[in-house]
Length: 341
Ligand SMILES: CC(C)(COP(=O)(O)OP(=O)(O)OC[C@H]1O[C@@H](n2cnc3c(N)ncnc32)[C@H](O)[C@@H]1OP(=O)(O)O)[C@@H](O)C(=O)NCCC(=O)NCCS
Image 1 (cartoon, protein in one colour):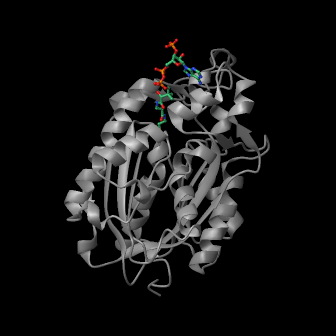
Image 2 (tube, helix red, strand yellow; image 1 turned 90 degrees about the vertical axis):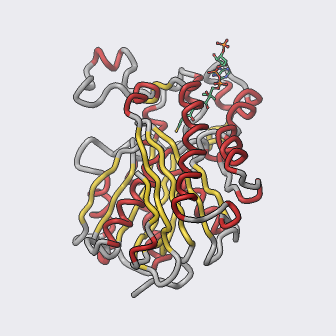
């Protein structure tokens, strides 16, 4: 699915962003004590030096809430103003009710429709596209999109091929009408035949959480790292290129590239193939690892805090994740006061 969206007249953009990570830091040196690995191996193969880990008592909504509150504050709206909340997560508080309902209740968003979205690490971009659709069609006015993950709870801490990669965190964005800028287009896709390459087999209706399935450790992330790597390097490039073409934009128009932080080698490869200069890339994988649907909003918040995002800047975001899914979004940054109210 590919669409250049700015042509329909209604401009929809991000008017507030926020992020949250747990305090606890797990370094590569800590991992050396847990599995047969080394800081050198992890840094060289992934670029990751440390990641944040939630407390045993913390669930996805606990991380989502501070991120959401910051986004609402920046957008200068209250929870009760929201009419649509979507939380992208692969690690919901529980199967149901949806984590978004927990978030809506805590924010006092009594008028909002609330549901979760499962598209792996592409979830935040899928959710932005849905919020865009809801606002531009008139279905909703003030929407909140959250990516929140507690991947540490579905990580097998005895499996060195996966446990080095993931971390916990949350990011949020308020999406509504804006006077200028806003989303220029989306490109989203999925190849379900690749599902087994990155999955959590148990906990659903195929393999319920029985003692037998837990003993087989089927409740943890299972990944064919090499296949996911190959797939990711291909689609991170093709998705971004197709979206730029459809939007009539060129590389020169892109001011900032905010990729999903899965692996520094995947990001470097994609940026090189697309032709993006290194100083346009937002990178924080060294400090957070792969936080799945939280990774793009976490990076956006850091970029803004560091003064790398100004009104009028064109931002290219791309992700790949379980599904296997992928997505890209193009956005003209406009949250410095151009909201349409
Ligand atoms: C996981 C990943 C870092 C592994 O790197 P790789 O270069 O593909 O490594 P391989 O899986 O080929 O393994 C190479 C060797 O390193 C070993 N190895 C794997 N994990 C290791 C670790 N943490 N420390 C040390 N050695 C490790 C393997 O056992 C293998 O040893 P062998 O050759 O003796 O069998 C890489 O495949 C990757 O990042 N894939 C994409 C994952 C991803 O992004 N998933 C989320 C997508 S949203």
